[in-house]
Image 1 (cartoon, one colour):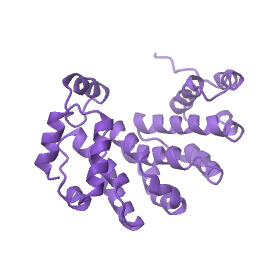
Image 2 (image 1 turned 180 degrees about the vertical axis):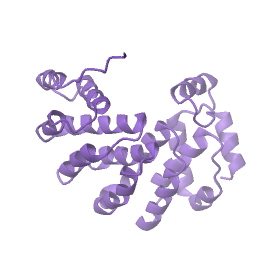
Image 3 (image 1 turned 120 degrees about the vertical axis):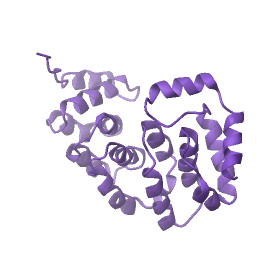
Length: 233
């Protein structure tokens, strides 16, 4: 598909009300056409069956959907691991809102065959000081690295990272909640040890309390670790 064909497809599947809703969730992001994500995923799979390299080389970043589609195609297309990493890095440079980060990250399934290499690849992003680069790296951790082999490293990373903004902090909180749901005993020391900043700690606790995967007595325990909000003078 050429760029104009993509634009025509998106226009044909646009929902103005959905566009307004998505825009309200991501103020300041790229223009939103209003195409739902399952439609974009299905289109990405079709592109990935054909000349996806030409598509990625010619794709434009005019709208939220056009960038999201590039992320989906990068995850869906079959290619050598080294190329996959290069194209993933190119996609990260385009991320300027949480949705463009979170949704494609879960589709990078190739990571699970190359965890050690990808772990090393993520390190500069974790400590970059750029909010969406940090969010990308942390979401990759929670999507692909909360495993027996990596849980200790993930928890230590959550403690060591200094979020550079709200969306990075919320990603760390989300990651901690995912770790707690799967590995509560390993995650307790992080929550009780005072290594998270107040905002991240309290948001992680809220996500744990809201989780259906966490026992009630565990929820009661984490509530005791909430930190008081600073009073405005």
